[in-house]
Amino acid sequence: MPFITDPSDTIVALATPSGIGAIGVIRVSGDNAIGVVDSVFSKYIGKEPGYTLHFGSISDGFKVLDEVLVSIFRGPRSYTGEDMVEISCHGSPFILRKVVELLIRKGCRPANQGEFTMRAFLNRKMDLSQAEAVADLIASDSMAAHDMAFRQMRGGISRQISELREKLINFASLIELELDFGEEDVEFADRNDLRSLIYDIQTMVVSLLETFTMGNALKEGVATAIVGKPNAGKSTLLNALLKEERAIVSEIAGTTRDTIEEQLHIGGVLFRFIDTAGIRETTDTIEKVGVDRARASIEKADLVICLFDVSTETPESIHDIIASIPEEKMILCANKSDLETRPDRWKDLKILPISSKKHEISNLLNALKERANELNQGNKTLINNARHYEALSQTSEALNRVMEGLMENRTGDLLAFDIRQALHFLGLITGEVTTEDLLGNIFGKFCIGK
Image (cartoon, rainbow, N blue to C red; front, side, top):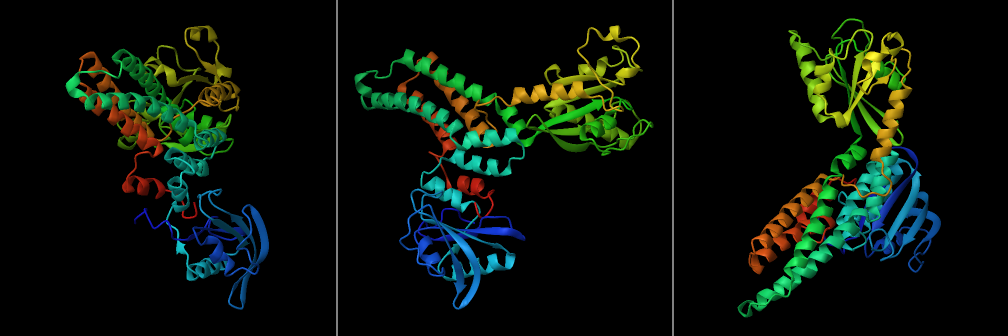
C-alpha cells in the first residue's frame, strides 16, 4: 500500500478504538476538512477560528445521525499542520460507521495507517524520531515507558542528532570546498580540529548506543528470569511477587517444565518475570527442554534472580549456577532464610535473605526498586528504537573510517565520502533522509486514526 499519497486529499478515520463506548472521535484532515464537515453539520463553521468547539447535529439529508461536538483546528497550528476537524459522537459503532461513510461520500478518502502523523512529519510539525515516539507513547504501559516516549516526542534525541549533524555539515562543506580547488593544494578544514570534532562526536554516538539495552528494557519491560535448582522455590516466589497462585507449586522436583511469564509494575517500571524449570542434569526428554530454555533465559534476560534453598545448599553447591550468570545482572536470593542456622557461612556472598512461602520478600522488592531507579534516570536521553540503534551503529563505523583517514593522511575526497556517509545515517534517524519504503514501514505500524 503506497504511503506517499496526494497531500491535497482530505482524509477521514475513526481516532478512538472500535467498539461501544461513551464517545467516539472521528478525525478529518486536509485542505477541505472544514468544508466537508460544514456540508453535513447543522451550523455554519466555514469561517470559525481554530481551537473552537461547536455543538450541533450531523445529518445525512433529512436524517439526523447524531448530536455531536465539532472541534476546529486550522493549519498550520494543528496536529497535521493542515486544517483539521474532530467530531465527537456518541460511541455507537453504527453511528460512527454512518458518519464516516457520509464524510467519504462528501469527498473524504479513508486514511491509511499512520497517515495523520505522516502528514505531521511531511508538514514539519515533527521529525521522524518524534513521530515514532508518538507510537511509543500510545503503546506505553508503565510510567517509565511513558516518560521516555514523552521525552522523545518533545525532541530528546532530535536535538542531540541535529547538533551532531550541524557540526559535521560545517566541516564537510569546508572539505567539499577544498575539492573545488584541488589543483591548488589548499586546506580550508584544519585536520587537527576535524580530528577533535570526530572524536567528540564519536564519543556522543557511542554513549547513545550504550543506552539501547536500558532504553529497550524500559520500553518492553525488564526481562527478569527466576532461576535455580529444582525445588528452590521459584514458582512460590513468582506467586508471592504477583500475590496470586499463578504457577503450580509442588514438592516434586521438576514440576515446572516450561517458562511462565508474568508482568508486574515496580517503581514505575514494568518487570517481566520469567519462572523457569529447575536447572539440573536430567535424562527426562521434556524436562531437559525446560532446562535448556532456563539456560537460554539467563542469556536473554536483563536481570536474573538466582534463587537457592538456604536450608539445603552450601556456597560450594551453588557455585556452578552462580558462575553461569553475569554478575552485573544477578540478584542472589537465599530462600527459606527463616530455616537458616549458620548464616555466617554466606558472608563472602552478597545475598538477599527471603522466604517465598511466608511472602517475606521485602529485601528482593527493595532491590528491584533500586534497579528500577537506576534504569529510570530522569531526563537522560535513551535509545529504545532498533532502527535508531542500527543508524547510530553505521554512523559510528563511518566516523571510525574518517578517523582512520585522518591518521593515514587520506585525500579530502575520501574523507568527504565517509563524512557524507555519517551524515546520511544520522539523517535517517530524524528524517532528513527518507525513502517511501522507510516511511511505509514506520507509519504502517500506527493505528488508522493516528
